[in-house]
Image (cartoon, rainbow, N blue to C red; front, side, top):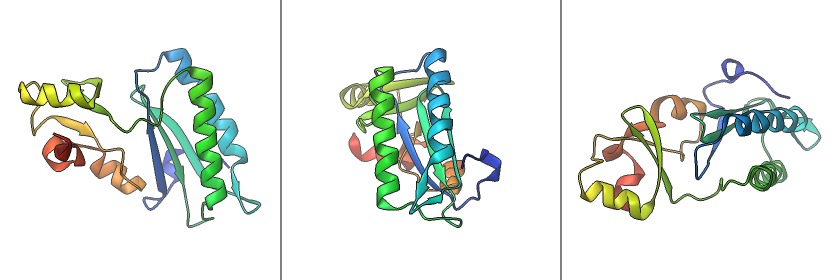
Length: 160
């Protein structure tokens, strides 16, 4: 069953899928429609999951489950991955490439491949204080505290 963000406890399990490009507004609308349909019927062992999903900053798809209600099983997680793959095909976007880095560039989101990220760092365009998006956060609480963090505090630093 689909719930709102504020209905989800801080311990909710979270998956973040980042697009390889900024999404068009029409694509965001379509993805949200598909998310709502998917989450309304998403279940684990014939039990509905308390779930939330949205698009953030025109590039990130968030899927969240309150595992205090029902645990997401391997099969239900597989269903969510297949769902993301259907979005990739319909919209024509890559949501699984973990080597595209998201950077806050003076308020604008920039999506940069690893080589470009290294180049920008070596030229001083981005530095240890640049805000990056840590898509490896696992819970709502981590999302709120550790999703947007300085490069020096992120796993991104070891990629340079």
